[in-house]
Length: 144
Image (tube, rainbow, N blue to C red; front, side, top):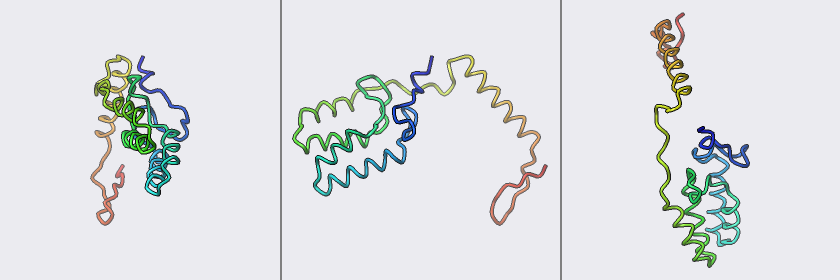
Protein backbone atom coordinates (compact mmCIF):
# COMPACT_ATOMS: atom_id res chain seq x y z
CA UNK A 1 0.00 0.00 0.00
CA UNK A 2 1.30 3.44 -0.85
CA UNK A 3 3.43 2.06 -3.68
CA UNK A 4 1.10 3.53 -6.28
CA UNK A 5 1.86 7.03 -4.98
CA UNK A 6 5.61 6.46 -5.25
CA UNK A 7 5.48 4.89 -8.72
CA UNK A 8 8.55 5.56 -10.82
CA UNK A 9 7.62 6.92 -14.28
CA UNK A 10 8.79 5.71 -17.66
CA UNK A 11 12.11 7.27 -18.54
CA UNK A 12 13.10 7.22 -14.86
CA UNK A 13 16.63 8.37 -15.63
CA UNK A 14 15.29 11.71 -16.80
CA UNK A 15 12.39 12.18 -14.44
CA UNK A 16 11.59 12.43 -10.74
CA UNK A 17 9.08 10.40 -8.78
CA UNK A 18 5.46 10.77 -9.78
CA UNK A 19 4.03 13.93 -8.33
CA UNK A 20 7.46 15.45 -7.76
CA UNK A 21 8.76 18.71 -9.08
CA UNK A 22 9.82 18.84 -12.75
CA UNK A 23 13.41 17.82 -13.41
CA UNK A 24 15.97 19.94 -15.23
CA UNK A 25 15.47 17.81 -18.35
CA UNK A 26 11.72 18.41 -18.26
CA UNK A 27 12.28 22.15 -17.82
CA UNK A 28 14.79 22.20 -20.70
CA UNK A 29 12.29 20.42 -22.95
CA UNK A 30 9.60 22.96 -22.03
CA UNK A 31 11.98 25.83 -22.82
CA UNK A 32 12.84 24.22 -26.16
CA UNK A 33 9.14 23.93 -27.01
CA UNK A 34 8.48 27.54 -26.01
CA UNK A 35 11.42 28.71 -28.12
CA UNK A 36 10.14 26.74 -31.12
CA UNK A 37 6.65 28.18 -30.66
CA UNK A 38 8.06 31.70 -30.35
CA UNK A 39 10.11 31.22 -33.53
CA UNK A 40 6.98 30.21 -35.42
CA UNK A 41 7.56 26.43 -35.43
CA UNK A 42 4.21 25.56 -33.88
CA UNK A 43 4.22 21.96 -35.09
CA UNK A 44 7.71 21.37 -33.70
CA UNK A 45 6.68 22.86 -30.36
CA UNK A 46 3.65 20.60 -30.20
CA UNK A 47 5.77 17.50 -30.97
CA UNK A 48 8.21 18.37 -28.16
CA UNK A 49 5.38 19.01 -25.70
CA UNK A 50 3.55 15.81 -26.59
CA UNK A 51 6.75 13.80 -26.07
CA UNK A 52 7.52 15.42 -22.73
CA UNK A 53 6.79 13.45 -19.54
CA UNK A 54 4.45 15.83 -17.74
CA UNK A 55 3.65 13.46 -14.92
CA UNK A 56 0.54 11.38 -14.39
CA UNK A 57 -2.57 12.15 -16.37
CA UNK A 58 -5.12 14.08 -14.27
CA UNK A 59 -7.89 12.04 -15.91
CA UNK A 60 -6.46 8.93 -14.25
CA UNK A 61 -6.75 10.63 -10.87
CA UNK A 62 -2.97 10.78 -10.58
CA UNK A 63 -0.91 13.63 -9.16
CA UNK A 64 -0.32 16.09 -12.01
CA UNK A 65 3.09 17.64 -11.72
CA UNK A 66 4.12 19.86 -14.62
CA UNK A 67 1.30 22.37 -14.97
CA UNK A 68 3.36 24.81 -17.08
CA UNK A 69 4.00 22.18 -19.74
CA UNK A 70 0.35 21.10 -19.72
CA UNK A 71 -0.80 24.70 -20.20
CA UNK A 72 1.79 25.22 -22.96
CA UNK A 73 0.48 22.10 -24.69
CA UNK A 74 -3.03 23.55 -24.60
CA UNK A 75 -1.75 26.71 -26.29
CA UNK A 76 0.21 24.70 -28.87
CA UNK A 77 -2.81 22.53 -29.64
CA UNK A 78 -4.97 25.61 -30.13
CA UNK A 79 -2.26 27.33 -32.19
CA UNK A 80 -2.08 24.31 -34.49
CA UNK A 81 -5.82 24.33 -35.11
CA UNK A 82 -6.79 21.58 -32.66
CA UNK A 83 -9.30 23.63 -30.69
CA UNK A 84 -11.33 20.63 -29.55
CA UNK A 85 -8.28 18.76 -28.25
CA UNK A 86 -7.08 21.94 -26.55
CA UNK A 87 -10.42 22.31 -24.79
CA UNK A 88 -10.34 18.68 -23.58
CA UNK A 89 -6.78 19.07 -22.29
CA UNK A 90 -7.75 22.29 -20.51
CA UNK A 91 -10.69 20.55 -18.84
CA UNK A 92 -8.35 17.78 -17.64
CA UNK A 93 -6.17 20.45 -16.02
CA UNK A 94 -9.16 21.56 -13.97
CA UNK A 95 -9.99 18.08 -12.63
CA UNK A 96 -9.50 18.05 -8.88
CA UNK A 97 -6.91 15.68 -7.56
CA UNK A 98 -6.52 13.90 -4.22
CA UNK A 99 -5.08 15.88 -1.33
CA UNK A 100 -1.40 15.41 -0.50
CA UNK A 101 -0.52 12.57 1.85
CA UNK A 102 -0.66 13.29 5.59
CA UNK A 103 2.46 14.65 7.27
CA UNK A 104 2.13 11.85 9.83
CA UNK A 105 2.00 8.50 8.04
CA UNK A 106 -1.09 6.37 8.61
CA UNK A 107 0.98 3.25 8.05
CA UNK A 108 2.17 1.99 11.46
CA UNK A 109 5.53 0.78 10.16
CA UNK A 110 6.35 4.11 8.48
CA UNK A 111 5.20 5.96 11.59
CA UNK A 112 7.51 3.84 13.78
CA UNK A 113 10.44 4.45 11.41
CA UNK A 114 9.82 8.22 11.50
CA UNK A 115 9.66 8.21 15.30
CA UNK A 116 12.86 6.16 15.59
CA UNK A 117 14.68 8.50 13.22
CA UNK A 118 13.53 11.53 15.23
CA UNK A 119 14.74 9.89 18.47
CA UNK A 120 18.12 9.25 16.87
CA UNK A 121 18.38 12.91 15.85
CA UNK A 122 17.41 13.98 19.37
CA UNK A 123 20.09 11.70 20.86
CA UNK A 124 22.71 13.06 18.46
CA UNK A 125 21.81 16.61 19.47
CA UNK A 126 22.38 15.72 23.13
CA UNK A 127 25.90 14.38 22.57
CA UNK A 128 27.12 16.81 19.90
CA UNK A 129 28.69 20.12 20.88
CA UNK A 130 27.68 22.63 18.21
CA UNK A 131 29.22 25.70 19.78
CA UNK A 132 32.31 25.59 17.55
CA UNK A 133 32.08 27.68 14.41
CA UNK A 134 34.46 29.30 11.98
CA UNK A 135 33.24 32.86 12.38
CA UNK A 136 34.75 34.06 9.08
CA UNK A 137 32.90 31.51 6.95
CA UNK A 138 30.07 30.50 9.31
CA UNK A 139 30.99 26.83 8.84
CA UNK A 140 30.18 24.57 11.78
CA UNK A 141 33.20 22.68 13.10
CA UNK A 142 32.47 19.64 15.29
CA UNK A 143 34.05 20.16 18.69
CA UNK A 144 33.91 16.51 19.77
